[in-house]
Image (cartoon, rainbow, N blue to C red; front, side):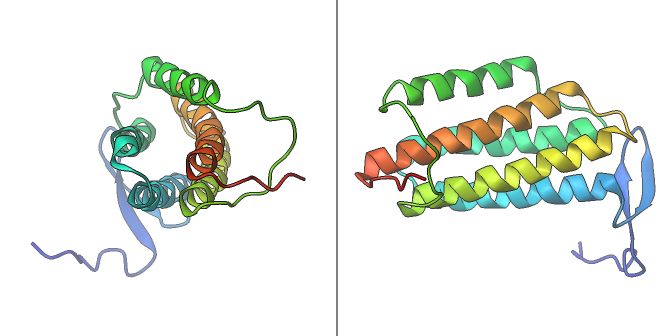
Length: 171
């Protein structure tokens, strides 16, 4: 099977909702998919920078990002429990660090810097999904998951610096 189909050469693509639908490549659905795909790629890069003990958690997040995309198009297994898992991770990680009392500049160790990139891209994906929801039905679980996910990436970035012994630069 070939990877290219030539069907998108004129600026449209096929998405799958209840049925296959052809849309322009700058459609809000495609924009949201693209932002989540970019985020997923950045999470994959973050997984390459972290110890094995953190990889499973990041792979779960990557799978959930696919589910968020499925929720926008057709069906998904993304659920409130996935948001609760993120909240538990945030609480667990936060409990292992000194309190955050000021803004911090993105950066530090490679893993922390990449987690900050994930956070920023996640915020963009969230904004795209919010825009999309003004025109399409988007399950609220997708909004909540992306919002909580950006909080997770901020917390995880701080934690990666703590683990690496790298001091954060405060604003």
